[in-house]
Length: 170
Length: 180
Image (cartoon, rainbow over the protein chains, first blue to last red):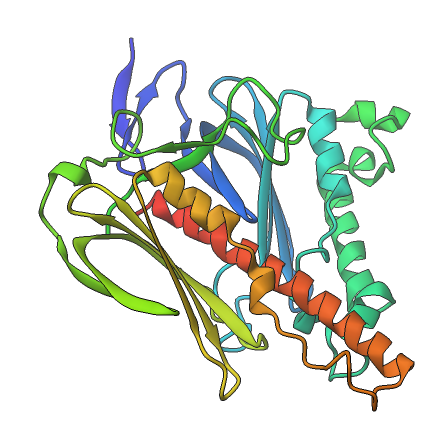
């Protein structure tokens, strides 16, 4: 028997077989958000002190048994006024293959959609040069890789889904 | 403002394989999550007058369905997106571009369409590259090749930046429409 309870979004959800699932909406960069009934399986964040970008990832399970991975890069909570509250980049992808979703997370470049001015450091060098070279861009990419490794272990750090170690997840 | 349903449902097919999905949906009225029905409900209607670049202002009675302003420090301009529904059931997509430089003219793009889907496509189809202007003259004989290369590289990143900046605003705007 299914009962209906209110959800955070004002709708209702079934209790029983689908307990714990709630309507979830994940924004995506330049696209319509993904919407689904789901529940959060895990979330992790990288918030290095002094970094101008905080990176977050999450994995949801839909009521229909699919997996949804979400990425978000946003200004730190202590960002200067005017930097904005909204993420610089959000994305989400759904699928039934956990390995393919992990590949999607690994293929993500945390620098690709960041504002160019963010990569400027005291105005030294053009943003293009700095983005292509060492410095903050490299540190952000390293931070993203570390977040994946910390969250998914060897599978998160693997170079490819074809890597034998990737089979360890999950 | 009113919540409407604008999202891509997670279905049986992986979304990571289809960067531009043919399964996008825009759901106005009807069942499912949230509430709508604003087309039949006159509550909250008011008169709007929207400025248009290169044309007379457009005035209509309707509802403001959503807004997102992408202002940030460090950017030469920013976008503001607004969506309205008129009392006669049409939709108004309003894209505003505000420039920080003195002397620059802000841009106001207003499009009136018959359906929510068409309005969303106006926002999704907007090309933010048009908002970037070259800060150098290709015909300027005083610019040596090295300077032209630097200027061209700078223009390239500013164009990419404008597109990404607009994508960020659009993504947030489309998500917020669902929350009213």
